[in-house]
Length: 423
Image (cartoon, rainbow, N blue to C red):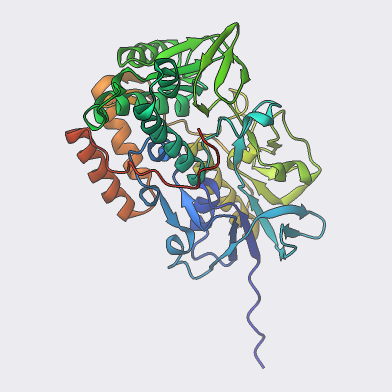
């Protein structure tokens, strides 16, 4: 009697973001069984999340069901659930509902969350921007403030409604500030009768000395000038000291506002802290050069959950290209182990950084080239279209952008979601 076919090793991947999904796809056709678990049923293209928040794109334009993405990968299963902890010795992940998932290899790509630097009470007043739910809530608050201002008789309260504060001068904060200001300046003026939407204040607050700190001083200054040109107020070196129901405190200045968005910091999800291994100050797991967990070569950590400190520039930033390349590397090292080949140390290939500042404006650093304005904006459009995982999304997003550019009238301006508070 012939021996039965051996059972392929199980590769459990926690997280369907850039790192986890790319690792799963890199294992297509390999002699393994892939199980990808995520608390959402969709893969989210986070770099464009701010465009959902600013009513430029719809949620389905930047998200796709994970099962649909992996539908043709015969060795991949998908589990909807959230991993609460991992028993490294038993090689078993435990979900929040008590279910257990055993594995032979584990790739942790669970991502990050907004960090309020110990002021967690601010979360309800100043939502972060990490999920589609966050984006829809920000969009709801942004659009609803104009409706409230239109009905307000008191000029002081009207100014309060039309003041928006964005905390954090990184790419998310910069791009959101520029897009919201252009929405108020170009899209909404003809739709309201009693208010001047173009006079809405968008204030970008950055505690450091400049915005887009990782872009270099030259592009940071260009970005600052670009934002100020369209009317965004940028406050540098002034950390937020308090967020109240109807105001923020900026040093000695109190700014009345009904809408605050938090883009100031992130931390790793709590899963990393449950592993019993060293983590950095924001909860990221310190990994080996091959991205494995110290003392557990069968476990890899990638993306925002990993603190890779073996390169020349310190820990790598939590951006999509890092997660994508780490997911590919982890899958390759896993297969190398199965084939009894040596593993390779991870080497990040920095392909550049870019951020939009509004309609037809961007800053970009690619290789040795730094450029701004319309050419940078076109490069940003092309690269982000190509990175979208689903072909349908590329087509729809392209036409939405084309329509918005030609008409200044993006079509996703719907107020949706349960009213969690009277803003």
